[in-house]
Length: 140
Image (cartoon, rainbow, N blue to C red; front, side):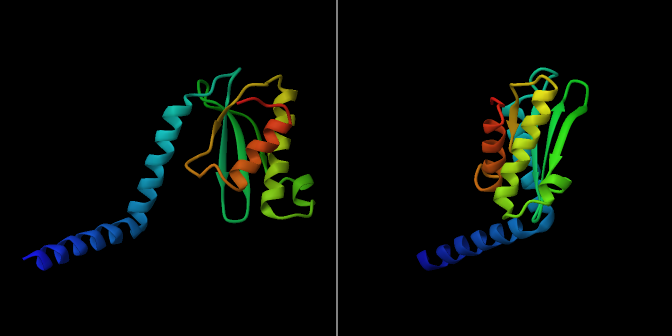
């Protein structure tokens, strides 16, 4: 009896794992993580915008967003000419992207932002963007 119940439990665990590997379920899970983080971060305002990060396999994009108006105040990415021309790995370019968005924010007169990591772990390239933005003078 005990052996049979263990098999059932293992089969249920495998089914659960297989469900999580389904692309639709996986994308829905990531979307829920993004929404949860967005609730904690709060909406960006004109004087305290949301610094949103999107990370693809090769590039990284950041935006300063005013959620009350639904506008993007400034944006920077690793595809910008001055950053793409630099030599270095993706993490180093991410730090440059953070510095670029900080420079654009200070031109707009912004010092305080809310960091939205977009469901990604605060590690690697996402952390490099945050470090670059902090070194550029942004506070969050």
